[in-house]
Length: 353
Image 1: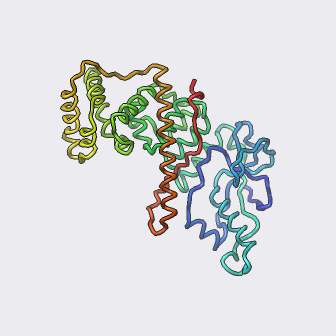
Image 2: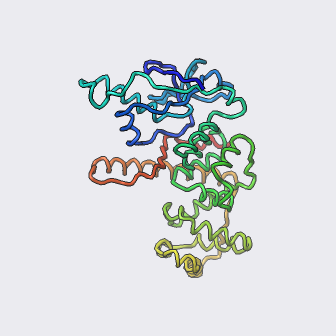
Image 3: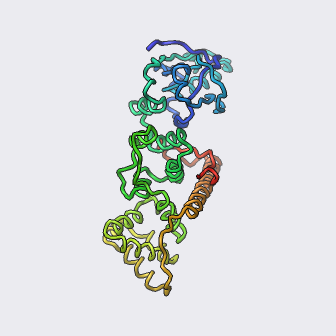
C-alpha cells in the first residue's frame, strides 16, 4: 500500500454510507490532540469501487454525495481518527498558543491507499467490517445497521433492524425469527446480504405477532428482551404445536397483576417453571370460550410492522429525553458500553411490499 498525505483542505474525501456511526472515544480524541495521528487511515479511490454502486457521504455533514469524483478518497478504516484529527486541526488554527496542546497537529493526515483489486469480489462494507474486527470490533448492532443500509428494501432486514433499534440482542432476535438463537449471527448477516445465505426458516410474521402479543398484555420491552418468554414458547413449540397454541392462548388472557408477578420473579423461579404455573392459573380464572391464535396474514403482518415501528419511534423519543436529562445533570455519569445505536430514520409502512 502506498502512503499519501491528505490535506484537510481537500474536499474529495468521503465515508461509506452504511459504515458504523461515529461514537464517543475520549481517549483516542485526547491522544490525537496531544500526539497527532500515529496510525495512518486506510482509503481507496472511489473509481476503484464505484461498480459496487455504494453511496458516499460527506464526513462532516453526513449528506450523501450525488456524483463523487473517481479520485475521491473513500475512508475504509479510520473514520474516528479522521474526524478527531480534523476537529483538532480546526481547534489548533484558533489556538493563540500553537506551542501548547496542539503542537503536534498538522494540516493533513497520513493515509494508506488500498489496492483497488481487493474490491473486485468483495463489497467495501464487507472489507470494512473485517478490518474493524481486527481493531475495535464491530458490535452486532453495527453489523445489523450496516446490513440494513446495504439492502434497505429487504423486509427481513427491516424487521431485524427494528428489533435491534429497541435494544434486542442479536441472539434474542434470532430466537424470535427462527426459534433458534444460533441462526442469526454477524457472519450469517454478511452472507445473507451477499446472497450466500437464504434464511429460509425465518418467520418475521410470527416474530412480530409474538412481540405484539407479549407487549399488549403488559410485558415491558425490557422484560421481553430477557428471553424468558420466547424461550418458554420455543420449548412448548418443540414439544408439540398443541402445547404451543395452548400457551399462546393462556398468555393472551393474562391480567396486570400476573404480568407484574412474572416480571418480579428471579432466575430460580423461571428455571423451576413458576412463571408457567402463574400463566396457567391466571388463564383458568378467565371465563372465555374464545381461543387466541397467532395470525400470520399479510394484513396483520403489515399492522404488526407498523406497531413495531411506532414502538421504535417511542423508544427513540424516550432515549432522547434521557440524554437531555443527563445533560442537565452533569454530576451523574453512566458507564459507556461502547454499543451506541443511532436511530435516525423512520421506515414507512408503505415501504413494505
